[in-house]
Length: 379
Image (cartoon, rainbow, N blue to C red):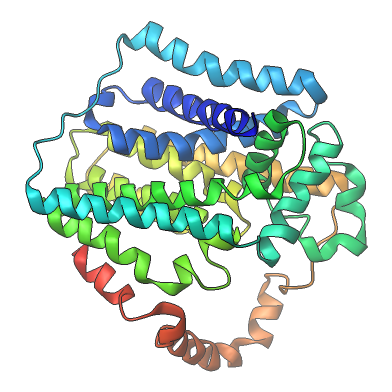
C-alpha cells in the first residue's frame, strides 16, 4: 500500500511539471519524451513545493493537500484542453552501440537508487531538509513559526528555502506519516533527471549521440556525486541544485545556438526561476545564469521583453527574504555577512582560498579520475 501511495505522490509531481511545460512551450514536440519527463520532475518539484508554501499561508491539513492535488491534476488537463494531444520529438532509431550505452546508463541509475535506499540520510539530508519536512507535516503542512525563531535550531539552517523538504513533505502527505525511508526516493530521481538531461543537452549541442551517452555514463564514476558524503545518495541538496543549473545553462546554450526556437529559452527561464528555491547558494547560481541569459539576449539581438525571464526567480528570492524578515528567523553562523567591510577585512585570504580550491579538484578520493573525462565528453 505504501508503494502505491508513493507512486501516486511521484505521479502528481510529474503531472504538475508536465502540464506546466506543455503550457509554457509553444511547440512541446521540440523535446523528446525522456527530456520531457526529466524536466517535468524539475518543474513538478518546484511547483508542488512552492504551492505548499504559498497556500500554507491560508490553508493547512487536508484542505492544503487537496488543493495542491487539484493544481497537479488541473495543469495537464488544461494543457491537453488547450494544446490537444500530447506529442514528443521523435527519436531516430538507435544503433547497437547507442543501445548498449543506454543500457549501461539505465543500470547506473538503478545502482544509484539501490545505494540511496541502502544508506541512511546524511547530516544535511536529516538535519537541514528532512527535519523541515517532519516539522511541517506535524503542523498540518505549514512550517511552525517557532522553528524559525528558535536559536537552538539554528544548526538546521532555518533560512534555507523549502524545495527539497516540501517535496519530501508531499510524500508524507500521501503516506499519512513521516518516513525517512521513502523520503530518500526523490534523490535517485534527481540523479536520473540529471543524467538524462546531460545526455540530451550534449546530444543537441554536439550532434554525437554516443559522446552524449558517455558523458552521462562517466558521471556515475565521480565519487562526490554518487558515493561520497554529500553525494546524491545521502540526501544532500547540492546535486538537485546542480541539475537545475545544468538544465538552465544547457538550454540557454541551445537557445543561443537555435535563436529561432524560443522554447529552449522558455525552458531555461523555468529552470532559472527555481534555482534560488532549492538552496540558499542557488541565489549565486541564479545570478550567474541570469547574467549569461542577459548576454545571450544581447548577442542574439532578442527583444528586451526576454529579460522578463529573470523576474520569477527574483520574485522568489525577494518573497523568501521578506518572509524570513517578517517571521524573525534566526540565521546560522556558518557564513559571514556579505558586505564591503568583511570583504576588505578578509581579502588576504583569497590566495589560500584559491589554493584550497585547486587542491580540492586534485583530490582523487573525492572527484576520481573521470570527472575530467565527463567534461571532455561533452565538448
